[in-house]
Length: 67
Image (cartoon, rainbow, N blue to C red; front, side, top):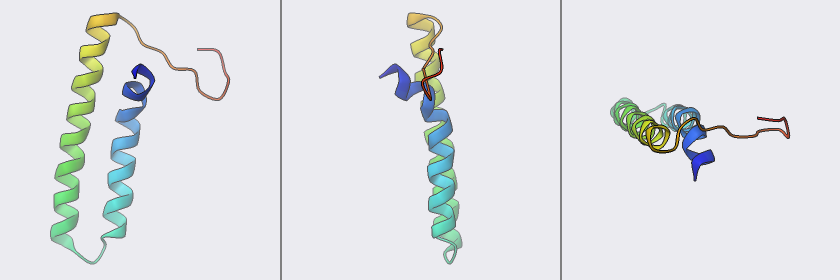
């Protein structure tokens, strides 16, 4: 679960940017996706902050490189 929390602040904006690009014909939908993405980023950042405060520094190993 910790590795997901570390990666979420990167994945959330990326996913909503892709969704916004796919909704290029609908400006109201793009606005709604932007707000939802910002709220998702805020929530993931708050969850990550809570996890760091509870357990200390968190790391994740990516690409078989030592963390």
